[in-house]
Amino acid sequence: MTRTALVTGAARGIGAATALRLAADGFRVAVLDLREQDCEETVDAIRAAGGDALALDADVGDTDAAAAAVARVVDELGAPTVLVNNAGILRDNLLFKMTENDWDSVMSVHLRGAFLMTRAVQKHQVEAGWGRIVNLSSTSALGNRGQANYATAKAGIQGFTKTLAFELGRYGITANAVAPGFIGTDMIRQTAERMHITYEQFVEAAAKEIPVGRIGVPEDIANAVSFFCSEAAGFVNGQVLYVAGGPKA
Ligand code: NAP
Image (cartoon, rainbow, N blue to C red; front, side, top):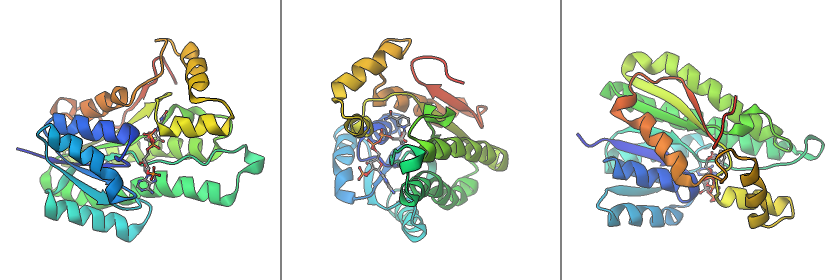
């Protein structure tokens, strides 16, 4: 049976690598991001590899847009029984300089977005009696200077994930979180800019602190998401897996 997966924030970075990996695993993949045209590269790569994909635009924090996106997936690709809540933004600043807008924007995308998308998708998972939800947390959930908003959201994602595991497990649905460390994506480029250093300087300094001696690549995270979405992971529920090249707690 071919199942459908929906990956948010999948135009680039970790989301794009995850969409490609899930397509390679045999899922049809709905590739969602803020602008539909930004999803085309991911969709083309999936189709070029023989997979089935659909580009979708939605702001995950918008109730109507989230519901409409899920309805489109149902109509055009099949009911989504796998959901990867990956869309994310940074609005870093030290607390005394952080604006209400910095706080609200981060909560809207990470927490409200994951909530709205999951609420819209779980109906289809319950109907199917099977589902996989994977939420993107972060090592920043453990606390990180300049990220009061983001760290709070990523810790919240862990509570959300564990609650979904309790509520939905009886329907054959698992919910787990992947908490990446330092992964080379545009998000990290933004952070380097904010710190007034080059991306290369930032990466070199970070790699020195990581036990495996390198920063992560999006595929490192996609591999972990793939495991949680697999049949084999059916008894793994409510877990947070740090994928950071070294232990985190
Ligand atoms: P990225 O390269 O910035 O990609 C994030 C994607 O999400 C972008 O395409 C972005 O679109 C999209 N997006 C933002 N707001 C959205 C919204 N409201 N609705 C739909 N899509 C939206 O980020 P990434 O590094 O791949 O990160 C992916 C996830 O992993 C995020 O949840 C992030 O917090 C988490 N993470 C990343 C790292 C890391 O080191 N990179 C570490 C830990 C956790 P636009 O580009 O148009 O804004």
